[in-house]
Length: 459
Ligand SMILES: *[C@@H]1O[C@H](CO)[C@@H](O)[C@H](O)[C@H]1NC(C)=O
Ligand SMILES: *[C@@H]1O[C@H](CO)[C@@H](O)[C@H](O)[C@H]1NC(C)=O
Ligand SMILES: *[C@@H]1O[C@H](CO)[C@@H](O)[C@H](O)[C@H]1NC(C)=O
Ligand SMILES: *[C@@H]1O[C@H](CO)[C@@H](O)[C@H](O)[C@H]1NC(C)=O
Image: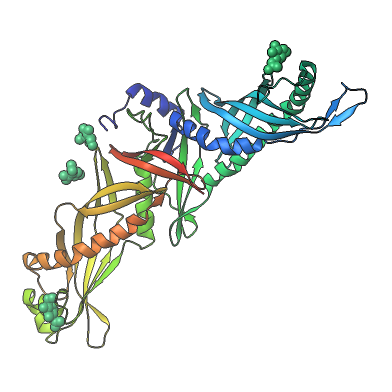
């Protein structure tokens, strides 16, 4: 997408003033999202509008007669939603009620067209979810018709029945709509639920700003908090500034635009590192044709190893990431820099591990980001070579030129496999229950990541 990362400086300035706190993600719902809600909202609205009508008191005959009136079916030829700047969403529904009047001697069926209009106010509540409320609601009744165009009913009776239904329904329809909005609020509340990241870690999102609503989109700042063993992962604040998602070109067609700041990546990496998930052990096996991690192979490169271990022994690499990996986000290019510390050990005759030497390592990885279900996932590949230097040695001086190839060869694949397994598990994106991201596109910009996506509601 050309220019996907471009920004309007004026807009950035305006938005920067608005967001005083430190959001980690920005969510923008575009018109396409409202169209989708219109599509999937028809069926529940149709069900909600299937109300009961009280009996009609027929005074047209000689005796007062109570006549049952029943809604046989509800059809929604049209449900339209649009943003109202500064307020929320306007709803227009065209409804046709199929009504049966159990009149004696013969029942009568009629079609009653109603337009239901409502303004739905969108706000944020104190616990950080969105709350919808109906600020205005009205129903406009059009003259009823006969489904088969028959003429058997007197106009006078038709008018009376219609007036009865109108009085009976006008409040009920808005009440039903309000009930549906309450259900939706409960559903929206699932945004702040904890989503697992790893076995002992979770992420929670909450809305921290009043949504900004224009005629084209609704945007809100959403804070992400990562927890490890129930404790929040906090980054030092120095140098960080409020994250603002610039208005990008080409995202009007996507239902949702999600901006993820560098902060989120830093927090996620810090959490993985604190959890110890990034550390790994690479173990050699004796008599293995393809695992050169044994003292006879090392002994050919380091004479002291051959001297100390005349009998072949398996060698273990303990890889620890004591420094947090650094993610760098540049336009079309995301990378990870790792500084692992490797201990090269061997099992001594009494089977305790014995340190041969240790290495300071630097590795750069390419990071490819993708979205599946509602998770952002990563895969890595090597970017350039592995840089090694000796930290400590119990086997005398080491010629790095000799050892480099061996160590980097045995180290690269397990490291990539380990990182790909970890990052492949992914991190939950902001969502509500049963709502998935589909056909997502991830764009890496200078200092942040943008996801353009469609949404799919699947139970
Ligand atoms: C980023 O990639 C997109 C296409 O994927 C391209 O249009 C754009 O020019 C690239 N930007 C830079 C700065 O390389
Ligand atoms: C229905 O009634 C109208 C007048 O009320 C009349 O003009 C028309 O011919 C009638 N149609 C039928 C099919 O009886
Ligand atoms: C040590 O590793 C090499 C290379 O994989 C292998 O050829 C050799 O058999 C191993 N030595 C022992 C004693 O397992
Ligand atoms: C991405 O950036 C790194 C430096 O940060 C650079 O070495 C690498 O070549 C870049 N990759 C691409 C595809 O531009």
